[in-house]
Image (tube, rainbow, N blue to C red; front, side, top):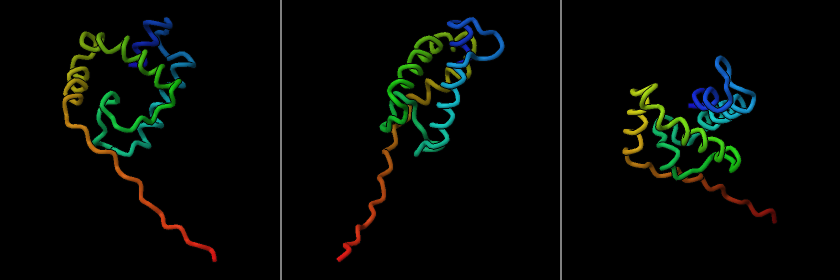
Length: 104
């Protein structure tokens, strides 16, 4: 989706621009650290918002642009994403509480 957005909005044919490369690297980092791992819901339904607000705005712009176009360019992935959006949303894992030792 990022490559499609960059191609259409920034005129890049081969490689993404620096801004889109940064967004792609950030998204990959956040996905690698996701608490849900393979069971991750779509970002819209996810109970844990892991993107910084500025990056969330950028990825939202990418999805708004590329999402409808995915049906024509990549129908399989568009259908998979649509089906993922209908799956039940998992609960966010709770943080493990650590006990505090009194030093006295």
